[in-house]
Length: 159
Image (cartoon, rainbow, N blue to C red; front, side, top):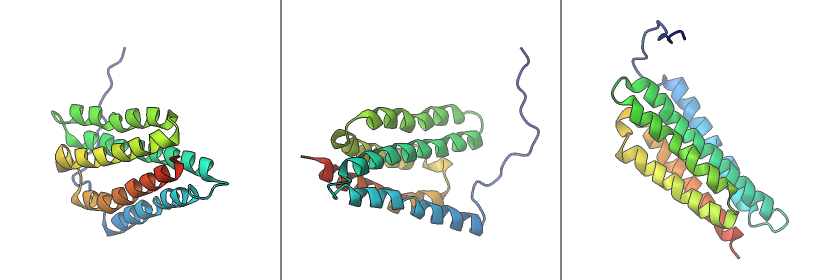
């Protein structure tokens, strides 16, 4: 078998985007809250409550997996010696979200809220040094709205 070779390009020196890139990330981050808030609200409307709760849970699973993917990117940027642990951590959100996605919303939604909170803590306590400060600041309000939306959906789905 041929050995894989590293591409011959210069390493990325700064993971922070320019001002326009950062504005785009912030705009997309806040726009990504729309499905959370909409599904949580519709969870309280009886004709749509079952579909809305399931949609809320599914979207949360996708976003939790996406948050892990951010850390996969950080692992690629981390360099030797630190990347192995980052790769391992990066797959945990998807591996957590998948079984929760299979649970009924009355169980899956509060557990997903807990998973989002746990991942927020992991980012701050274990791997913050690998992430840009602006990203961590953005995650605070986004995570809060996500967690509150999941709790609202859970309250609507609970008997």
